[in-house]
Amino acid sequence: MGFEEIPHTADWSIQVWADDLPGLLAESARGMYWLAGAELAESPRKTRTYEIEGPDGESLLVSFLTELVYYAEQENLGFDDFDIRIKDGRLKVEMGGAPLKSLDKAIKAVTWHNLKINETARGLEVEIVFDV
Image (cartoon, rainbow, N blue to C red; front, side):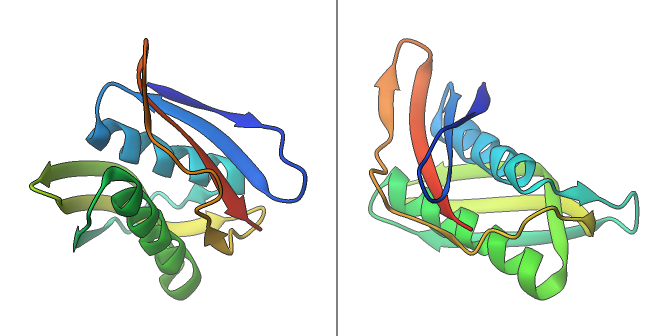
């Protein structure tokens, strides 16, 4: 599993890979926070549950990351612990995190630009473009 920044003309973009879809979502969240330079406070720890239904992995990914952007903007929260379950198009995430201690740059939105989850030799891969 992993992620890396890739050059993009106007926005930020990362390539993410993992063995399965839950891993891809968790690694995408970690990559998004890394790109934004997010640093979590040590305490108090917070938990949230997020559930949504979607027609495909791409929809679940965008919805999940958009929810994390919302938490950062509205509640000043970031997350570093994810228990992700997907069954029959339904995503359920139990996540743990803390208040954001610092954030270098806010991500405005998760885009659909060229978003496609692909099966590759290293598992599932996706390129995600963020509007900043």
